[in-house]
Image 1 (cartoon, rainbow, N blue to C red):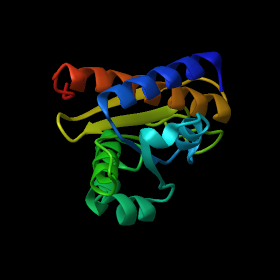
Image 2 (cartoon, helix red, strand yellow):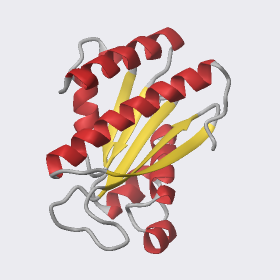
Image 3 (cartoon, rainbow, N blue to C red):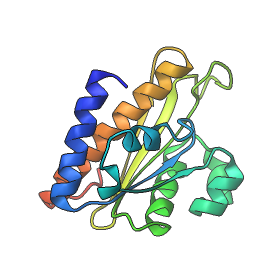
Image 4 (cartoon, rainbow, N blue to C red):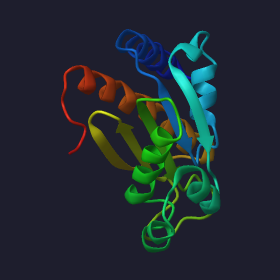
Length: 171
């Protein structure tokens, strides 16, 4: 874990505990790396509820309620899919905030429309809806996954601050 991630993680943990926020994750391209990052911090059970690793489309449907229509029409790597993943993580947990990720980490699997490095991240809150962001990260598989973890944490921090200030997440 980078020093930047350590700093962000400590900030996230502090905010989550102060605001009494429980977090869930729904991960595809990171394969549990966000959850592992969280649980690497002692005391994370105070604010981290659970993680879903849904690498296959079938698991996204079964565990998180992503619709077949969304997967067929938008694909697994899309804003619509990660939005449904995050909402499904909220519905299937005791969390009040969730983050979900899906992407093409490489080295293969990219296309013209979704090149290697393409990642979608969604954040969902019980109180204020959801937000999605599209990224195209540079580097190898490890770098893409690492950047995804960093941006997921950054977004969670923003969500907690927004919720505390009663600012809706929807953009």
